[in-house]
Every structure is written in structure tokens, then in C-alpha cells.
Length: 435
Ligand code: NDP
Image 1 (cartoon, rainbow, N blue to C red):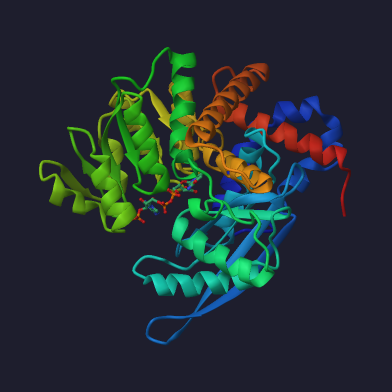
Image 2: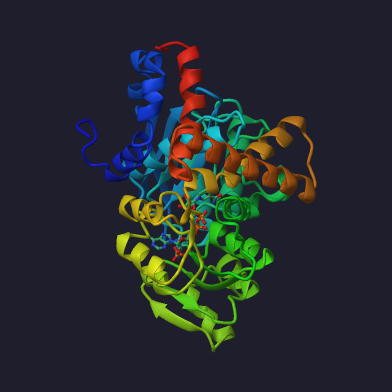
């Protein structure tokens, strides 16, 4: 906190992990002595750079780009790029730190990293987004590579942006490698990557509900916040598993549809049209739109899936959900629940799935995309989907068993933190104190 006093999200992420690690430190005094705990909170490398580009009026614009290469103990740095006006080092460091443990939990050889820019793609033309992405990659290309650091998408970075960045990387380096994941299917992308994070959340939740509460998505009422990549496919899988998704949101407000949200309409509005969520009323006038996205947690539900952004669900929202009978919360976004909300969910014995475990399906499938690129081969949708399902089941099992082993019973937050940490810490220890 003394070194980086203005990065509250990063402190929050570190505190949340370290809260669980006391028994690990007791069991491994050699890791304490080797400074593993101090080393793991310090990124191996941070890169900040200028991103100048020219808008459609011929005016020069300047944004800030960054990449935090946090930890490479178990594999090349891996983590998304976020384009959103709120991006600053504290956000990217929190995301990069979480990514270390998430990637470790997938069982695949991937280190942790994250990057992005304060550029806002909203309201920009395709040409403007393209020029920005090209300028961004002109600098980033010096620091990444298929065996060094493999970025992916995140908020504001989808297939369009990945395509522009990949095209530029290829031009600069004159090589076709799997340097980015989330690519289009016609140039090295993996089937299921689009759906992976959202589907993965539901696979994880279904496993947790079955094992901890003897329940399932079937016949449950579900609320999903957000209407981006994660939210849409979490809603899709929750519906396929027999749940009814009655509310979804964007950053301005939320839609309630007692008949169940029509996902084809939602995809049309958000994926194709890039419009506001209140457009839903044009197609389904019986639905209700309410201003203010955080009000979505007042909608009565059995299962809540926060899939929009960090700290979107606070203690008051948690109280309301519990009063309304909600029995399970699965984080699709990164750190969407505040620490107070998480403590309350655990105290009240809800099934609570922490993002670093439950949303790991996206990066896991990115790992599968890297494997396919290295083999110059593509698996079918069914092959990738079944691998994803197995990985999510394994993450649940590992998380649940680790929680039990360290005396935290059904506390999946502690289980995920410890299981993710132990693998990375032991690799750091084995590799010595690298200078
Ligand atoms: P998208 O950009 O596709 O969608 C983001 C959604 O969240 C949009 O509906 C957006 O609304 C809403 N949103 C953004 N900021 C806010 C805010 N401040 N308040 C309320 N709503 C907001 O991003 P993704 O779906 O990819 O990412 C969502 C979350 O999931 C993030 O936390 C991300 O880090 C995490 N995640 C994503 C993965 C992936 O594979 N994509 C993998 C693992 C985690 P609007 O349209 O109005 O901006």
C-alpha cells in the first residue's frame, strides 16, 4: 500500500487472496523464507506506452496503453486486454494478479498478465477502432509473442479488436503464430472461445450446486448482470440447463422480462447492433426497463450471476438477494462482489463461486486455442466443449477439496486462492530467486 497508494482495486485483490493463505504459510515456512509472498505481489514487468491515433475528423488523439506481465512461473504470461475509460494501473494490476491464480487453476501451463488502454471503443467508427488497435499493437508487439506473452480480449475487446491487432502483429513480425487468442475462426480461432467464459461459469455452478446443496439450474430463476460476452453466454447455458433468466443489464440500466429474456433479441442488440439494452423493449414491449444497473439485484431470484464488472454487487445488494431467497452466486466477471458482500454470502452459507475459479473457462479455452495453433489443427465444437466441461469440473473438485483440506469446508474462495497459489508458489520456489 505504501508503494502504490492509489491502487485500491489491486489492494483489494491482494488482501482477498492473502486472507486465505495463513495456513499455507504455516505449512511452508521455506516459501516464507524464500520471499515467495513478497515476490508474488510485485509484477515481473510493467510496460506503459503512448498510443497516438487519428480520428475520423483528422484530429490526433492520444491514449495510454499498458501491459502488466505479472508472473511467468508456470508458463508464458496470459490474460486479456481491456479497453475502457476507467483503465489505469490499479485495475490492470488487480486483474493481472487474479489471473495468476485463475490460470494456475485451469491446470494448463499459463502465467498471469493483463493489459489494456483508457481508450473507449463506444461510439467510435470501425475505422477509428482499427487505427487505434494498429497503433496499440505497433508498440505492444515488441513485448509479446506466442512463447512469451499471449493477450486475449476483455471488456471492450472482442473479435473485431483482436482481428485488427492480429493483422498488425503479423505485418510487423512477418510470422503467423498464436500470439493472441479469441481470434476469428477463419484465422486460427478456436470453436467455443466466444461462449467459453459464460458456459464455464454455468458448468462450474452446476457442479457446485449438485455437490454442495443437492440443487441445480433446473427450474431456477436466474439473474445475470451485464449483456456482454460473458453475460450473454452465461445466460444461454443457464437456460439450456433448465433455468429461467429473467433480468440482464448494461452500464445504464436493466431489463426484467418475466417470460424469460429472449437471448436472440439480446444478441441482435448487443453483438450485432452494439446498442443500449433498453432497445429490448422495441421487440418485447411487455418487458420492463429500469434505469440504474445496480438495481438489478433487487430482482427476486434463486441464482445470481454477476457478469459485468468489478465491485458491481455490494453488501446492500447482497442483503437484498439473500432476503429474496437467493441461494447461489457465481461470479462471471472479475471481482464483481465487494469483500463485504462475499463475507456475507459465505456467512449465510450460499453457494458462492469466486471468479478466479468460476470464470476460468475463458482462459482455459484460450489455452486450448494456443494448443490448436501450435499443432496447426482445429478441434470440433463438441471436442472443445467437452474439454471445457471437464476442466470446469476439475477446477470445482480441486477448489472444493483444497478448501476441505485446509479447514475451510465449503468456502470456495479460500479453496480457489490456496489451490491456485500452491502450484505457482512451488514453481517459484523450485526456480530459485531469479534476478
Ligand atoms: P464486454 O465488454 O463484452 O461486456 C461488458 C458488460 O458489462 C457490458 O454489458 C457493459 O455494459 C457492462 N459494464 C461495463 N462496465 C460497467 C460498469 N462500470 N457498470 C455496469 N456495467 C458495466 O466484457 P466481457 O463480457 O468480456 O467482460 C465482463 C467481465 O467478465 C469483466 O469483469 C471481465 O474481466 C470478465 N471476464 C471476461 C472474460 C472473457 O472471456 N471475456 C474471461 C474472464 C473474465 P455497456 O454495454 O453499457 O458498456
